[in-house]
Amino acid sequence: MTPEKEKILGYKLSEYYRLNSQIKELNDAKNRLNKEFKDMLGNTPGQLQAGGFIAKLYAQDKSRMNEEKTLELLRNKDLTDCIKIKETIDEEALEAALYRGEVSQQELDNCVDVNIVLALTVKREGESNEPKSGSSSKSRGSSSRK
Image 1 (spheres, one colour):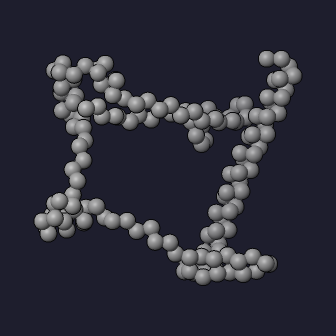
Image 2 (cartoon, rainbow, N blue to C red):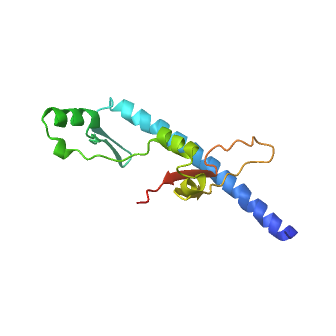
Image 3 (tube, helix red, strand yellow):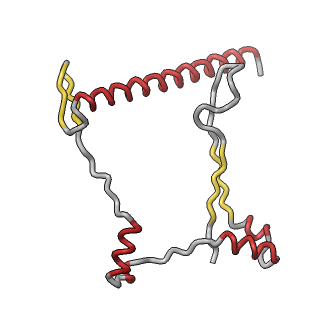
Protein backbone atom coordinates (compact mmCIF):
# COMPACT_ATOMS: atom_id res chain seq x y z
CA MET A 1 0.00 0.00 0.00
CA THR A 2 1.33 3.41 -0.87
CA PRO A 3 1.99 5.88 1.97
CA GLU A 4 -0.79 8.09 0.59
CA LYS A 5 -3.35 5.25 0.61
CA GLU A 6 -2.21 4.17 4.08
CA LYS A 7 -2.72 7.73 5.34
CA ILE A 8 -6.24 7.85 3.85
CA LEU A 9 -7.07 4.43 5.29
CA GLY A 10 -5.78 5.49 8.70
CA TYR A 11 -7.99 8.57 8.59
CA LYS A 12 -11.06 6.53 7.56
CA LEU A 13 -10.46 3.91 10.28
CA SER A 14 -10.06 6.67 12.85
CA GLU A 15 -13.27 8.33 11.66
CA TYR A 16 -15.14 5.01 11.77
CA TYR A 17 -13.89 4.34 15.30
CA ARG A 18 -14.88 7.85 16.42
CA LEU A 19 -18.37 7.61 14.91
CA ASN A 20 -18.94 4.15 16.35
CA SER A 21 -17.97 5.41 19.81
CA GLN A 22 -20.32 8.39 19.42
CA ILE A 23 -23.19 6.11 18.41
CA LYS A 24 -22.69 4.07 21.58
CA GLU A 25 -22.56 7.20 23.74
CA LEU A 26 -25.64 8.65 22.02
CA ASN A 27 -27.60 5.39 22.44
CA ASP A 28 -26.67 5.27 26.14
CA ALA A 29 -27.80 8.90 26.60
CA LYS A 30 -31.04 8.24 24.67
CA ASN A 31 -31.79 5.16 26.80
CA ARG A 32 -31.22 7.15 30.02
CA LEU A 33 -33.62 9.87 28.83
CA ASN A 34 -36.14 7.26 27.73
CA LYS A 35 -36.12 5.75 31.23
CA GLU A 36 -36.37 9.20 32.81
CA PHE A 37 -39.43 10.13 30.70
CA LYS A 38 -41.12 6.82 31.48
CA ASP A 39 -40.43 7.34 35.19
CA MET A 40 -41.89 10.88 34.97
CA LEU A 41 -45.07 9.38 33.55
CA GLY A 42 -45.14 6.67 36.19
CA ASN A 43 -44.67 4.04 33.49
CA THR A 44 -48.30 4.51 32.44
CA PRO A 45 -49.58 5.86 29.13
CA GLY A 46 -49.59 9.62 28.91
CA GLN A 47 -47.66 12.51 27.46
CA LEU A 48 -45.15 15.18 28.34
CA GLN A 49 -44.99 18.51 26.57
CA ALA A 50 -42.26 21.14 26.78
CA GLY A 51 -40.12 23.31 24.53
CA GLY A 52 -42.27 22.64 21.48
CA PHE A 53 -41.94 18.86 21.82
CA ILE A 54 -44.47 16.22 22.82
CA ALA A 55 -43.41 12.85 24.18
CA LYS A 56 -46.15 10.23 24.23
CA LEU A 57 -45.95 6.99 26.15
CA TYR A 58 -48.40 4.42 24.91
CA ALA A 59 -48.96 0.74 25.43
CA GLN A 60 -48.46 -1.70 22.58
CA ASP A 61 -50.02 -5.13 22.74
CA LYS A 62 -47.28 -7.61 21.93
CA SER A 63 -49.33 -10.61 23.04
CA ARG A 64 -48.81 -13.94 21.42
CA MET A 65 -50.50 -17.22 21.88
CA ASN A 66 -48.96 -19.50 24.50
CA GLU A 67 -48.31 -22.60 22.43
CA GLU A 68 -48.27 -25.08 25.34
CA LYS A 69 -51.58 -23.87 26.79
CA THR A 70 -53.21 -23.71 23.36
CA LEU A 71 -52.06 -27.23 22.44
CA GLU A 72 -53.38 -28.54 25.77
CA LEU A 73 -56.74 -26.82 25.18
CA LEU A 74 -57.02 -28.20 21.65
CA ARG A 75 -56.15 -31.74 22.77
CA ASN A 76 -58.65 -31.56 25.67
CA LYS A 77 -61.37 -30.47 23.23
CA ASP A 78 -60.35 -33.18 20.75
CA LEU A 79 -59.51 -30.54 18.14
CA THR A 80 -56.32 -32.23 16.99
CA ASP A 81 -57.18 -31.29 13.40
CA CYS A 82 -56.11 -27.77 14.46
CA ILE A 83 -52.61 -29.05 15.29
CA LYS A 84 -49.85 -29.47 12.71
CA ILE A 85 -47.06 -31.94 13.25
CA LYS A 86 -43.62 -30.51 12.52
CA GLU A 87 -40.93 -33.01 11.56
CA THR A 88 -37.64 -32.52 13.38
CA ILE A 89 -34.36 -34.36 13.30
CA ASP A 90 -33.64 -36.78 16.12
CA GLU A 91 -29.97 -35.94 16.55
CA GLU A 92 -29.20 -38.97 18.73
CA ALA A 93 -30.72 -41.36 16.18
CA LEU A 94 -28.89 -39.55 13.37
CA GLU A 95 -25.61 -39.86 15.25
CA ALA A 96 -26.26 -43.59 15.73
CA ALA A 97 -27.06 -43.99 12.00
CA LEU A 98 -23.82 -42.21 11.19
CA TYR A 99 -21.92 -44.51 13.54
CA ARG A 100 -23.52 -47.59 11.94
CA GLY A 101 -22.58 -46.31 8.47
CA GLU A 102 -26.17 -45.95 7.30
CA VAL A 103 -25.46 -42.33 6.36
CA SER A 104 -22.06 -40.80 5.64
CA GLN A 105 -20.61 -37.58 6.98
CA GLN A 106 -20.29 -36.39 3.36
CA GLU A 107 -24.01 -36.93 2.81
CA LEU A 108 -24.77 -34.94 5.96
CA ASP A 109 -22.33 -32.20 4.94
CA ASN A 110 -24.38 -31.78 1.76
CA CYS A 111 -27.40 -31.02 3.98
CA VAL A 112 -25.75 -28.09 5.73
CA ASP A 113 -26.52 -24.57 4.52
CA VAL A 114 -23.49 -22.46 5.37
CA ASN A 115 -24.09 -18.76 5.89
CA ILE A 116 -20.95 -16.76 6.59
CA VAL A 117 -21.58 -13.30 8.01
CA LEU A 118 -18.85 -10.70 7.87
CA ALA A 119 -18.73 -8.08 10.60
CA LEU A 120 -16.26 -5.24 10.95
CA THR A 121 -14.70 -4.19 14.22
CA VAL A 122 -12.35 -1.24 14.52
CA LYS A 123 -10.33 -0.60 17.64
CA ARG A 124 -7.24 1.33 18.58
CA GLU A 125 -3.97 -0.54 18.34
CA GLY A 126 -3.20 -2.19 21.66
CA GLU A 127 -6.87 -2.61 22.64
CA SER A 128 -8.16 -6.06 23.52
CA ASN A 129 -8.60 -8.49 20.65
CA GLU A 130 -12.07 -9.37 21.96
CA PRO A 131 -14.68 -7.91 19.58
CA LYS A 132 -17.01 -5.52 21.42
CA SER A 133 -19.90 -5.80 19.01
CA GLY A 134 -20.16 -7.95 15.99
CA SER A 135 -17.72 -10.58 14.86
CA SER A 136 -17.34 -12.95 12.00
CA SER A 137 -19.55 -15.92 12.57
CA LYS A 138 -21.01 -18.90 10.82
CA SER A 139 -24.63 -19.78 11.19
CA ARG A 140 -25.75 -23.13 10.01
CA GLY A 141 -29.20 -24.25 9.19
CA SER A 142 -30.21 -27.61 7.85
CA SER A 143 -32.22 -28.07 4.78
CA SER A 144 -34.40 -31.05 4.28
CA ARG A 145 -34.09 -32.98 1.08
CA LYS A 146 -36.81 -35.37 0.18
